[in-house]
Amino acid sequence: MEKLVMNRLYTQTFSPAIPPPQPIPGAKPKRRGGERPMGPGRRGQHQEDVERDDILTQKINIYAWLREEHLDIPPAGDSGRRFLKLAQQELLKIKSYRAPRDKIICVLNCCKVIFGLLKHSKSDSSADSFMPLLIYVVLQANPEHLVSNVQYILRFRNQEKLGGEAGYYLSSLMGAIQFIENMDRTTLTITDEEFEKNVEAAVSAIAEKHRLDSPAVVQEPTFSEKTGFQQGDSSGRPSLDMMGESSTPRRSTSSNEGGRDADDQAPITGLLRSIQKPLSTIGRMFSDEPSPPPPAPSNASRPPGSSERPSPRPSTEVPPDGQQPTSRHHLSAEEAAARQASAEVAEAQRLSRAEHNNVVETLAGMFPDLDREIISDVVYQKQGRVGQAVDACLALSN
Image 1 (cartoon, rainbow, N blue to C red):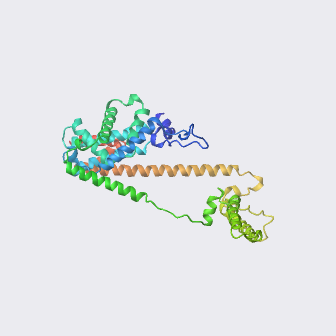
Image 2 (tube, rainbow, N blue to C red):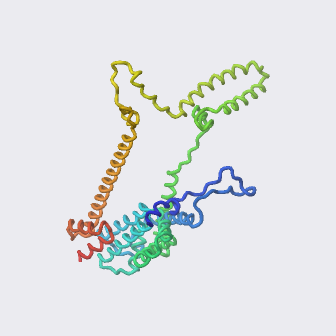
Image 3 (cartoon, helix red, strand yellow):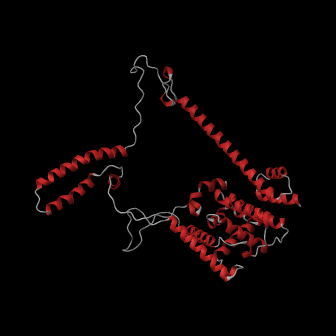
């Protein structure tokens, strides 16, 4: 029930999915110089979530150069890097789900893989060893809207389900987020010179990327027939008022120049009217929606000897003996729905097989001593749950 409800309400409960408020059309500010009244949209806690998302993303981009030794993490080796890579992949899956339960499962899988790395390397499994690895995984993964996802879980996940293991892992992730938000030179194991050098290079790279993404292009004002259409009526037709307004100043300026006679303006007015008619026709050609094709001629109007072509659409076929085409419509709709459902099932099975093969391939690299078929059976038995599969492989390898 929670999954069904939250899938329907996702665009109204997940902070980044809620649109920001827009000014109310036609509304005026209450006092001079004040802001215009805003309509419904993202406010309060939801707006704070999005702002914290932006701050966290900026911090992660600035500290993307961090390595394991800067967080006092011992060298992991090739096998350990596979564990860390899998943990990053599991954390990145959080944006693919809408239900709070599915999102917290991604957090659980990520943390279980990290604990699997600690067990595999026979290291201390306490929080002193776990938290630096979790911080490093978050920095390397850089998941989108991580703060909003955590707050979404806290607000809408059944509170009875947030105890025990799930609550511990979620609290650990919140601690990692807070550490990154407040991270500076004093929280890292690094020299001042290296820190300033890397931060300066990262800030310069970010500024250069922003400059390339949004170049300042100055366009000189030009007039064309397309511009005239855009400034006129919203349907694409040239506006009669615009034509009238454009001709009015011409008459006023011409009357002031050298005392021209009114007879000189008659040819200009006639020329504008003659141009206006074809422009109106062209505007209608571009703006009007294409009209539906004319109905097929009946048998009576068809010349003798001409063969009747069957229509590709059931709706245009003429049923014999006055039979109504309702049943044929109904059958074709059911057939289309059945084909679509079959295609969706086939696509889901294909994605499931690809995900299974990907997990097996990753675990085979993490546990080279285990046979690949055994790993595949473990993944099947655990129904693709990565955290439980890692625990089972650790038990088998020991």
